Length: 204
Image (cartoon, rainbow, N blue to C red):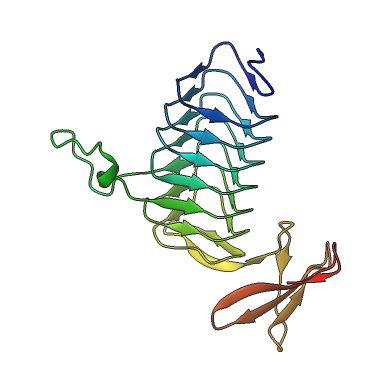
């Protein structure tokens, strides 16, 4: 891999002008980073990935092989995109009626720490909540709450996951403690929130 500065790009990949790439990021074989895209620090961009114009990728994001991140998609820090998962960017595509301007694209936001499994499809216009876990092959057609576990076609809420990825189960008082890292959560009418992070001894 060549090293234009403090990041690495394989010689088979193309980086257009006016692309921002953060320190420590590695871009593997046969990728195309298009003009106006922004990639943060310490990201891993797998083989055959396309980053569209003005797409925004945060820090420490991992994008596995064969993923296209189109214009209108924002990936916050610590997001994981599994191999061959799909983002769409137009709801009503027609070959004879091109929809290829920014106003045609539906915005998609994947919030911090969320994971999207292999071959899942995210229909444009959705927001994936913080630390949500989308199962392999799921089809997401609506917003996903923070910490939600969603899988199936169409995707349905099946449970809740900790920041660390392990399942969490709420008791009669609507509280849960992760069996792996001891983070504590509360479940209210407005969703799940972190009450205490035992790894830092700080309350949320």
